[in-house]
Length: 197
Image (cartoon, rainbow, N blue to C red):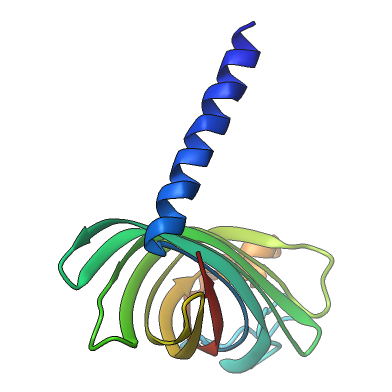
């Protein structure tokens, strides 16, 4: 009986949020290409290095998908929460990120929508010659501009992000030797489309 009541309450809440969002265009979802320059100030000479032995930076390519829900509005400003996932690869190494956070967006004229987002979550990395995937806390800050093409479609003109993540290395995979490596810096670039409801 309690489960049935909880499910009914969850469905009513979802329907209410959906109806409100559809009437005001507060939900956006996207699936876009993503390029990230990952760099570290200290090279790892081992095969456990995420960037590759003796490599301090590398470009990774892949995709990101996510969405946002803006539930607060004041004049041209809106605020809400965001959720995103990305999967990227380079030189047989891979990085995956799942993050949630807050966002603030504005409206300039009728068409332009600049925004900023701050997210935290889990980032996992796997070096090219390892079966081990290392998961660590990650954070990112994003800024971008969407341009309205139609009632339910925006072009994401650009998005730039900056973040930090401790990637796989000889100190995180387990070979250790008392060497500590600093967190890697992530510089993200993306563009594409956003579908709004």
